[in-house]
Length: 203
Image (cartoon, rainbow, N blue to C red):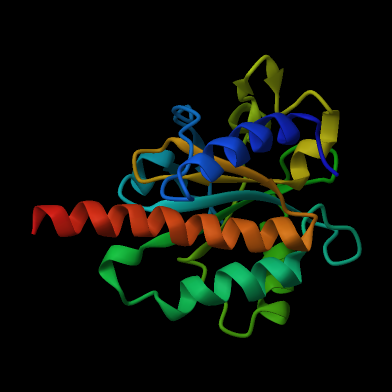
């Protein structure tokens, strides 16, 4: 089921969402700025994602044999939707997957993981689904309601984080459960709708 913290996050979210009829997602606060290295070896910063919605995950060099996320489902339910809307300026969404060794530690075997994605995702676009090498534990070191996403050890790798355009955390769900991946897809759509409404008010 993933770390216990997910239930704390979700319990709060589900209660408030029902009250507000799913109009907005909860805001769990700012994600600390971070740096990472991409597959070309270039150093990059989270600041480049300001103005984008970003789904943050981990992915293992051992995929597909041993993955902490359901890669096929994330591809089908989330990536394909992003790819179909890639030309729409106001719908800029990225997936940022940190490659780990399975124990939550960074690894530079990004090329091997890219080969997996190319085989599993025929229309794989590295500008949309970005592979990263970096200190992912520091990114997942998020505390809320008295609990931490890291409290259950390496199980944090199963979690998907949804970062909004202001780089705030808006949703945490397990990438190991089909229903949660579907819910994350709905959360992304809901967040996009929130921005569309705000944009319409200013036009």
